Amino acid sequence: EADIYQTPRYLVIGTGKKITLECSQTMGHDKMYWYQQDPGMELHLIHYSYGVNSTEKGDLSSESTVSRIRTEHFPLTLESARPSHTSQYLCASSAPTGRHEKLFFGSGTQLSVL
Amino acid sequence: RKEVEQDPGPFNVPEGATVAFNCTYSNSASQSFFWYRQDCRKEPKLLMSVYSSGNEDGRFTAQLNRASQYISLLIRDSKLSDSATYLCVVNSLGGYNKLIFGAGTRLAVHP
View 1 (cartoon, rainbow over the protein chains, first blue to last red):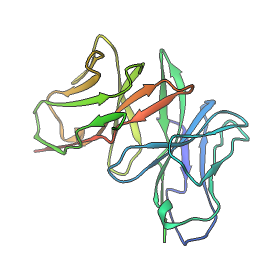
View 2: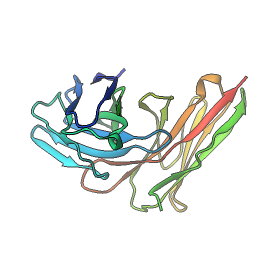
View 3: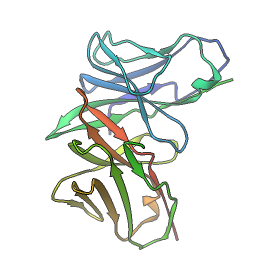
View 4: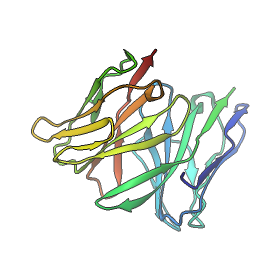
């Protein structure tokens, strides 16, 4: 089993609130990612990090921000939540296995903004 | 056009059936290919990597056709526990480990 943890598992919150989704991994992986997934749809990369103090935006534009102050921690923040932010947010880290990178996913945070 | 396309299904099959999924990708420079499995409301988990020569893991066989730019997954002797969504994932070049996920094919195995 992967050692990558996300909290909270479910979050229901009102419009305008600031929220932070936590993601931690104990595998010492340098590369970490945030994906967004709507029901029945593909995962879209919204942020990634190659190591401490490295963060980049992914393919899907997102109003969220991330930080990477410690290797094991990659939180995602929404300054003012809106109903359009309702989605599942999946954190992942990766490590090389042979020729490939293997992704390890956290259990996800299901966010509902009312 | 999406970079990775899959038939969404669902594929409804009886236990013991053989089922095959296909996936096409648009970037001919793609280097790595994978199948992930995602259960309902759960995170994706790596099922198997796909190698150029094709590879097998128990009841699962993956194949790659670079000329036609498609990947396949064959599941033999389907079990109830195989019911899930199967995601085709392609690593495209882009300066980082850019994995492009397909929307997935849903499989439902019934008794």
